[in-house]
Length: 188
Image (cartoon, rainbow, N blue to C red; front, side):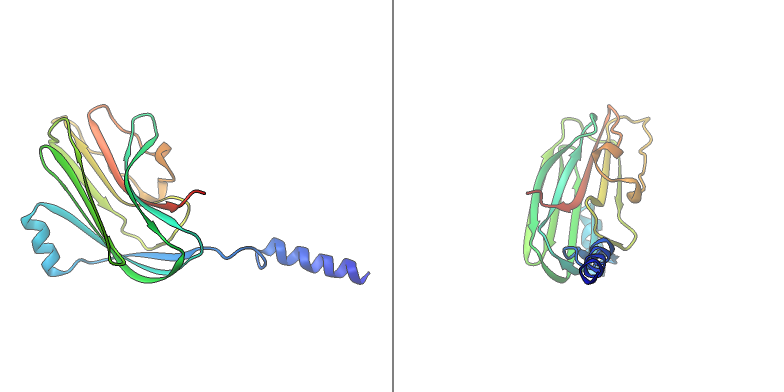
């Protein structure tokens, strides 16, 4: 009877999550940009977003710039690994578009990544969205979303970040390109 009671207690603790591996509890909070950054962004026709990351990661994550493709897949343009650790830091992001390029940049924990992607056609309309709500990380989180269109009569659609759980949730029209900054676990 004693063994049965211990087994029931163990099963209860296991099912309740008390004995499960430590979960990632990193909170991402959008923060305002500094006045100097705002002026610099305006002069250089850039979009800047900043996020405060606070909490603990028990496994590695990737911060990735991706392009969503029309077949509901994604292509990673570049990435930065975020190691398991305790964090209380800021992530800053810049994005800009010209007639020939889309440029990305991110600054995190002393590391900087920058890249650009050539555009075949000059975009005539663009939309940039940054995550506006505080959230705790999950398996797929979009921090920024940038849509470019080459069609003068095209309306650029906006997306709800809470509805994006992967590339299958983004529809890409024939005349547009969609880019995002995504935070997701490093796959083993």
